[in-house]
Image 1 (tube, rainbow, N blue to C red):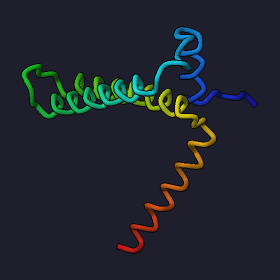
Image 2 (image 1 turned 30 degrees about the vertical axis):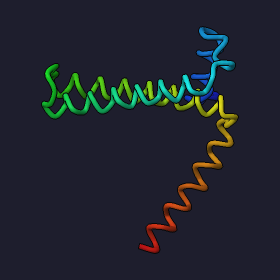
Image 3 (image 1 turned 120 degrees about the vertical axis):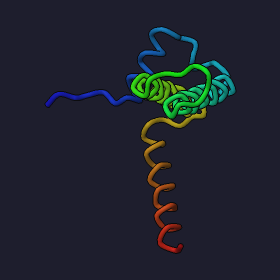
Amino acid sequence: MVYEKSVWVKILEFNDKYFPNWRTTEPIYYSNALAGEAGEVCNAIKHMIGGGTNRLSADLAREKAVAECVDVTIYRTLLLERLGVDEASFDVWFERILARLRERMEIA
């Protein structure tokens, strides 16, 4: 059986290799970068539906939106790590929040 590294692990390994000081960078850097990337996702979606002055074809705008979502995932992962949340802890948090959302949906 071949073990495939998770996206989370790949992000950490990449940053450890190319940005060795990332683990000591203040979390505010990652939260701000995350916000910026989320804005770029929104901008790409705006262009996808024909808004804005930099009109892109729907396919190019979609590709841009997907690429920006990858950037969001990278900065989200780095921010979580800097907040002391590793992949296993995130999975626990995810299941906890998902259970809470399911409960809300059943109450509604």
